[in-house]
Structures are given as structure tokens and as C-alpha cells.
Amino acid sequence: MRVGAYFGNHPCSRYHNRTTLRDVAGRQFGDMVKAVVDVEAGMMAIGGELHSDEEAILLDNGSRQSNLWGINLYPEKPSEEWIEFDSMINVRPSGGNRSRHIESVEIREAVTQIVHRLVED
Image (tube, rainbow, N blue to C red; front, top):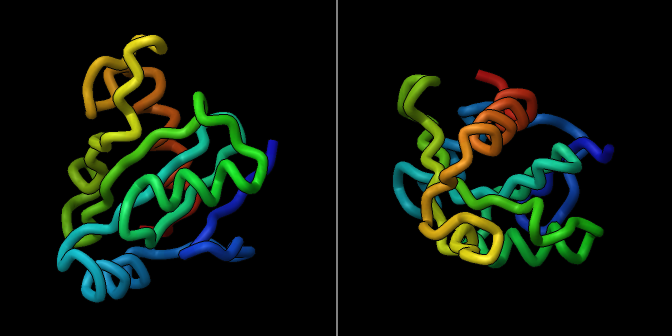
């Protein structure tokens, strides 16, 4: 299992914290940062303008599309509310996910664990 994060299109050897994400959000969307999580490899890409940008980074670095899930992070919100499981890349009817929301509780839990491991509170 690979473990780590990509910031923009560069791999990061260090973990991030919410202060870093607040700075990224301020430069992009105001209060939100887009991210894509590879639930198999335990990796995450953050900081892209679109989830598909981050998805492409992870695919270029060996991830499989079926393991990638798009989320939005709201670093100002409390821990139990700061992850939004919503992205167009999550729509995959043939894989059982028919909406933008990650419908599987198990996948949402895996995404949450990876985010909490890679982003310090």
C-alpha cells in the first residue's frame, strides 16, 4: 500500500494540517478545498481546480479509477462536518454509485480515515 498525499501535482512527503488547507481554500474557493482519495493506496490529492484534475494526478501515478473518490474539505468546520462526499467523479452506475454522493458507508468510512491520517487537526 502506498501512503501519502499530492499537493497540486507534486507528491508530498509530509502531512498537511487545516491551516494549510485554509490557505489553499482562500486562494481558490473561499471556504473549500477539492480532494480525491485513493481508498486502496491510502493516498489523497488536494488543491486542484476540479476533482478530475486530482483524479488524473493519481491515475498518472498508478491509482485505479475504481478506487478514487472525490470529496470537498471545509477546514473551518468541526471535524464531524468538514468532509463532504460529493463529486461528479463519484457517479458510476456500473459500480453501484448512482449519484455524486458516495453512497457506500464503508467507502465513506475509508475516505474519512485516510483524510484524518493525512491532515492533522
